Amino acid sequence: LVSNIHRQTRLSFFQLAIATLKKTHRLTPTTIAVLIAYFVLIFPFSSVVFKTSLLAKLTIPDFIVDFIFARWYLGLLVIALYMMGTWLAVRLLPLLPALILSETPPRKAVAKTWRMTRGQTWRTLLAVLLIFIPVAVLTTLLTIGLYLLQSYLDSHWEHWALLGATINLGVLQVVMLLLTVFFTVMLYQLGTSQAETFQLIPNQDLIARVPKRRRNLLFRIGAVGLIALVIGGSSLFYYAYLTGALASQPLTISHRGVDDGNGVQNTIPALQATAKEKPDYVEMDLHETKDHQFVVMHDENLKDLTGVDAKPHQLTLSEMTKLTARENGHTTKVASFDQYLAAAERLHQKLLIEIKTTPEDSPQMMNHFIQLYGQRLLADHDQLHSLDYQVVTTMRKQVPKLKTFFILPYTLVFPETPASGYTLETTTLAMRVIDEAHNRDQKVYAWTVNDSDDMEKVAFMDADGIITDQLGELKTTLYQMNHHPSYADQILQYLTSFSDDAEN
Image 1 (cartoon, rainbow, N blue to C red):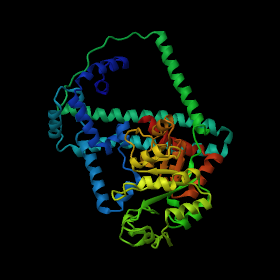
Image 2 (image 1 turned 180 degrees about the vertical axis):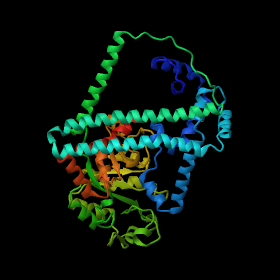
Image 3 (image 1 turned 90 degrees about the horizontal axis):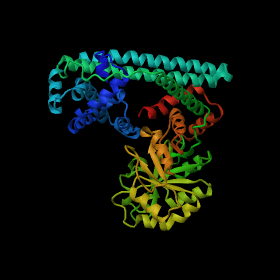
Image 4 (image 1 turned 180 degrees about the horizontal axis):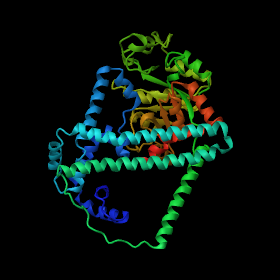
């Protein structure tokens, strides 16, 4: 389709679309496999250009990024891989039209593209930048301009602010869509032009002529009606979004029982301090000990918190609770789960308990846990979650009324599980995943959300709960969203949540 526009073939859009569909028989399974490998190989670059559901999921979660860049050598390795991906994307730019528009076998197309583009990478990169930079500048200026305009309406023309926001959001969406299409077409035209220059594709019209359809009055009326329907539907959607009809009030969940470093994670003093802020839940972690009891601890090695180079399963509960934990300028004793649970009950604080598992855990660990705490947790209206699927299935089978969530650091596809819901890493969280969970009567908690912009985004995505290290900031953000909404900020949030899902 783009190739014939590039060649200025005088065909209507309908003719181009029909003729293009007729040419899809050229895409053999081998060609499709090479295309998939091409996109996966260069996804850091191609995801900017070709937005697809798969490429959108190829994102490194924040907690992994933090782990990597805490180790400089891993950070350098990731940067090098991204640079290599970008270089390959530029070097193999003519490969895409060569695979689709020629009869050349995929292996020969790759080899010929590699050979013919030798020494052309910097020139191609410059051409790509000459396309990308103006589009990026226009997008940035448009976004800033409409944001400032909306901010002025919010503060000086409150009665017109909602109408202005609806119009501004619509204009921004249409223009950004046109700019995205323009960039994609221009980039593909660049690849097609190079493919012709290197004789990777035939320099002729690639599709047969299709008889021209006569446009009658009914067709024109239908087209106008369709456009009006799209504009009307979009306006109603924007209005519902801006007035908060699409937003929910998520549960507030303190991650590891702390708020802004107000204590040592997973300890009773931190729990007592955080409970004063009245979160809906306090999230905490537990491990099995050497004597098959349960201790409140996140790490599989105690060294970072206690200075003792040992694992929970190597010490008895009595030995564990004698250790002193230090963090955030605070010092306190490690707590047993019995102690922590009793403290939470005295505070009337509900818990979200993460059950940590290791290969060294006893075979009867879960049965023992259920026997000791199952009915008690149910009576306290506590909840559980775990990275271990066996924990989830065991809890759902033996204590079905106790809500148990499955933790997923990555959501490439939506899982089929008996879980009550999912705790999803916020970097790869998408609104369509939340919608799918809700359609199956399952909940979604977002973890870990520490930035106010991300908090607003997750709330607008209709997540059921937000797990955070910054509980006070979360509560303030949610209050401001409900009582002092900024339409200008909501427009920006739309661009980073609803728009991404729509494109993907």
